[in-house]
Length: 432
Image 1 (tube, rainbow, N blue to C red):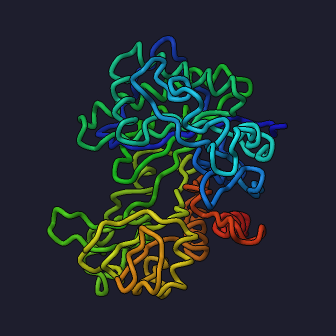
Image 2: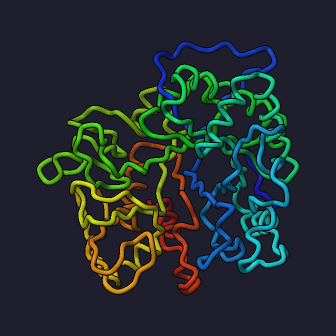
Image 3: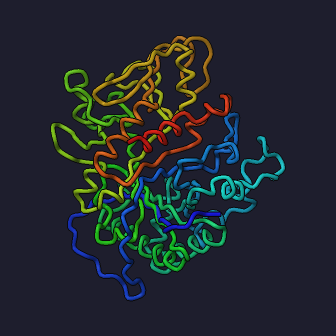
């Protein structure tokens, strides 16, 4: 059984605001009562529809769910086909929402991923992902929200689907292409969708949860006047590993630095690399939780995203070098194995970041380079996660978000050692 309590709706925060004037609510959308401050911090973790497939399969019944307060069943995008939601427009469960990855270990669709999630993660609130997390999905959602009728259909469809299948709420992850339309229009669309989703979730008993995934640099995209409609603003505090190419000095950087790099050691990174503190060139707070708070979002509604993944650069072997190759996504398990294939572990005390650099020895799978080539990996480990959680606590924030459980999973390890980053995060949250 689910533990009783208020259901949350998680939303991703993305837009800058130029003012805080209260937007009038339509008569059909009454004001939502203020949500009480939670008594403990949340740990919201993504479980992707791809998680149970491949050589590193992570079926829900093998995961240690203890300490995870909210699970986001991830990967459901918007489409331009009515009713605009992939689970209802994609035949045969091809997105693996219900039955998982056919042809891997689950060959005959005999394993219900959704039912198993509800059974084994029953101590956690289960949220259904929605929105437009990728280019095609992001553009589809933008198209949907350009028309009030389509927007109402989409929000109603998603809420009804989630309630019918036993979820506790929704997660909204809309990542619009930055140059696709003016920020003011994105702001208006985001506010409209939040209002419509809250309208549907408020009919649930208990009240449905709404969580939003937000990116750095566009914190003002979220209207603080409607923050009581949102339970969690989880900021994706990662993918910050490259300095901007427009200044002609694109260099290798840290994926998710807590603080800016040392100016003497990394002069370019210290000026251009985003960091969780939001400090660039001295004390200017340009992104992250502090920018959200400056925009009027209460700290206990804000969560810090923790990456269970990293990036590998081929042709480089340290941070701060002129970038040679394009950064490629890698899991924590791949990073650890690279230490036995020519990689050397390093720790940057200023940013509180681990990194690996070296030359590949022998044969190692892509996206790592071939034997004899240099490589550099930026990632997070147990120590950096503990540092970030301690910092999160010092700001009085609401919790942390993990993307994603599978990237931090090692199916080949002993059961007690399959999820080292998750266990580290739970310990750090529980530490006094």
